[in-house]
Image (tube, rainbow, N blue to C red; front, side, top):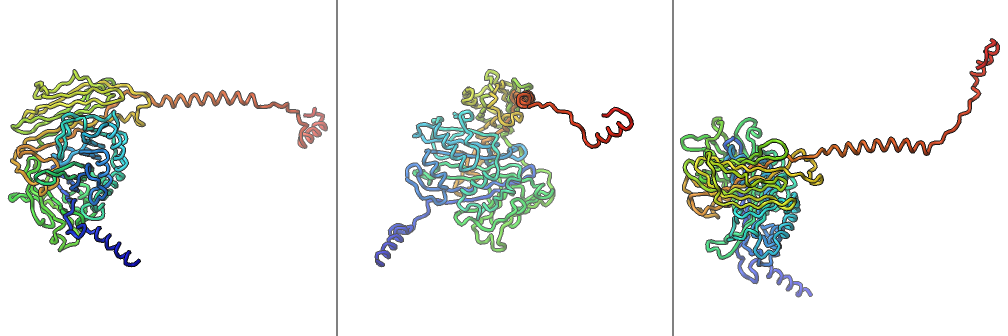
Length: 580
């Protein structure tokens, strides 16, 4: 019996070895890269961008995958079941101020944004979209279950696939925004649990909720897409990017100074890299530190310096490699600090080439006008931009009032796609391809009429207003500097999500502010007044009538009086006075 047990154990150990039946262990099929980018903003604030990239060399749609190592099993099963080609989800609190903070690396609209590309083998896209949003709502503890046909659109020109895909059928795409979604700790906790090291090691130890939500801007996102496994692109790998961007007010964390450090921002320092990560780095933007005018002082001294062309500009970064044994020789923890040698009012950075703003005008509660201003500050280059407008059905657009003007002249769009709304079924969808002349401001206006809702369709706080999804701008912005092609695997993560086909331009996707529109609101206090008045009248009438029907009356007989009365009568009789 003993020899049988030993034989079984030996067979299990042989089959469970990495190399199979005596073979040599092969390379791992998945890898993890983590990085943190710290960028001083023109306004004096600090932007911290975390990126965690898990790459898995697996065919989720073809292989029966049952073992997950770095790739989250919840998301892997979701992709396999619903035949998802790409998935992009963002939860954002606040608004990125492009004019004061500069061009963002990864911008997202306020609230919740979800857009998904499905495989062409999906028969019922709407059903898969609804079930997928409900499952994501449970995974990330968000209100994505409120996504339905009234806030879902199918763009035709915007939101092309970012991964390895050549999709021309836009009916496989679904896009929705919940601008009123509030982001809090319960959304951050499941997001951190998807990380291979969670928040126990590596850069994730800095993700302290108390500090992350005490910021001017907070955005966390999940991007899943297929990519090429190698240069020949004969095989497909799956990439999961978890990004988190926060903007700290340096004057509040630095007590009136623009100096900052990791401990001041996150109340923690970095002690080690994630043991499962193949690359773990911290990048600090030191582009303002030049040979002629050294304004910045970074401590400890970086191990290396990296130069890259980011969004049409040449940037210099101090690099701290957490996997390098030289980094933790002096100290057991890493606390990157940046000090300004002399006070500076603002950084000398140019205005973003492309930025936009949006607002509502008009008076009264019947009609109004939506205006969008798009700025092209490039001195001599014109370029086209794709504008996506999603307007709820209760704002009835007048398409014949659409006016596009640039420098006082009419600017006719090269392409326009409009899908009218249906009451309580779908929103308005307007897509336009507009040419932006050099150094110009393009104004787009369209009028609308407010609809009357049913009293059950109003929110619990109707006087607060109703939110309208922000506009989305997609463009290839011409670059001032020539950008050379770099290997995506060797370049930083923040430069490779939107790869450029050539070095003459770079892709930008911007979002405007969400709008807050007031609708004709009935006086919801009237039902309360009617209920109170009715209850009062019923109580008074019913109470009186009930008393008359149930109360009994008795005749009270006169009493003879007590001892005091008899004594008084005796005295009155003695005096000859009639008794009482």
